[in-house]
Image (cartoon, rainbow, N blue to C red; front, side):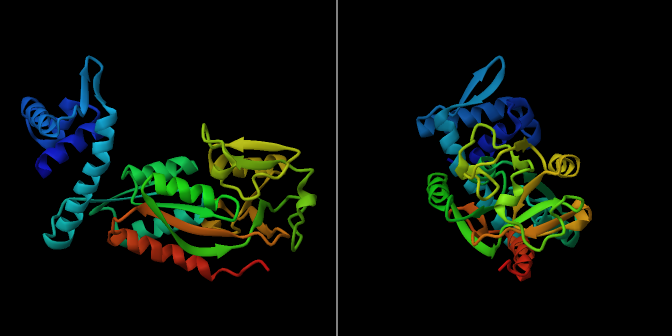
Length: 303
């Protein structure tokens, strides 16, 4: 088994086509097919199923791919560190819906430029943040833990071979429009929120409370509206006097100045942190991105 064969297998999965993979790798399709056949024979494992509809990965192939991507990523980092190859380097982040994570990503892209780097950010569901890091789609995943979800999520992290690192702690705030009836208060009690719709990010099939992006997800809400993206949620805040519970970190450059965060009258806290593949070192951009995230630790606490 060679690194070249491993790269071939990874490229086939990424392109979902033997022909497209051959073109991307600058090899002939017969040569690529022969290399994969040799690899499967050596491993005594069928990695792909060939059909008229294209290439499908087998369960054994999916398991092999997890190790293969780790190998290709290590190769990329070695080349980046020692050979100075001019090929475009990739950096990807997956995050729960945090504007501060997006703001830090923008700063990173501006700092390093897009001539040498290919950037990607996925603001998505909690389960997809974990899956993207597990499958090497993203180097870093940004999410939170608290007393309620920590035990369950740490078990899920272990099962997915990712590790969590704490960055900073923050209080819980009510994020709402500046025109909201409660917007001028210094603190908001949970009881005061009952007349207004609570806005929550949709988690799809993974609707367990442990995957909720909003803290206090198990509380009873008279009115609740699910949304898929941050822009829609902001519109609902303005149009329906909705609110969501969040870290209280405001990014007016991205969300505009129509919104405010009022501390919730609670002793609950949330720990903002990141996940990465277990045992995998971060690249230069990953380390720089974390430094940009850490600056949000300077925000005042909500005591």
